[in-house]
Length: 253
Image (cartoon, rainbow, N blue to C red; front, side, top):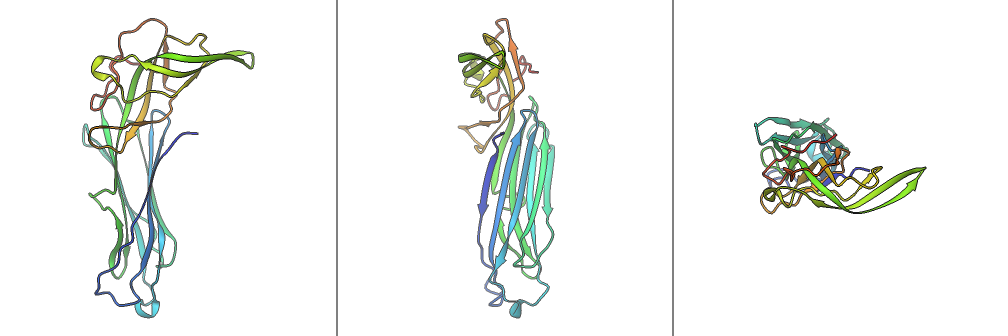
């Protein structure tokens, strides 16, 4: 199973004092953001869902509607390209469960980094915005996204016969990167291969993200099938170490 990035946030706000008693809702809404990757593409989803309680229709009148909004934006910091934006869901009664969701798919390359920004709010048809977690241009959650390249050498592994085939489980690697890109942003936790013994070097490519928008960065990387064994001793790899994108001499399948 692929790991996923997960973020939950909720916030309860009151309407201004000018709203009549009995027309003040108690919001129960959540901003939810998640992502996953196959090592090449980055799949990102943001949503808002929930309901309100405590509203009296004798004060507010029938026909009051609440509309959910989500701001889900991915920006390419290299060329300024923007994917996503602001999206609204179907309006519903104050006590109804309402939601809005949006998915964006990007393929980061070795020459760019992306920033994801997420926020959400709910708007009342008679009182305007009464709940928010961030806003358009003011994210509640931000993260950086990169394609990470790595050249590494296996240091620990075990091999066994499985189904009549020799299979090796590599459990530890040592990076083989240039001095400026050491330590790299990405280091695999393991690799299963039919190479026996394992190749002396491997090239990797995957997608990573971090909630740190300034140093020190703590990158979380997805598992990847973008792996290439290298039989001969290669030069040190041009690995990814933010803000250096890397990848100039690393190729993967």
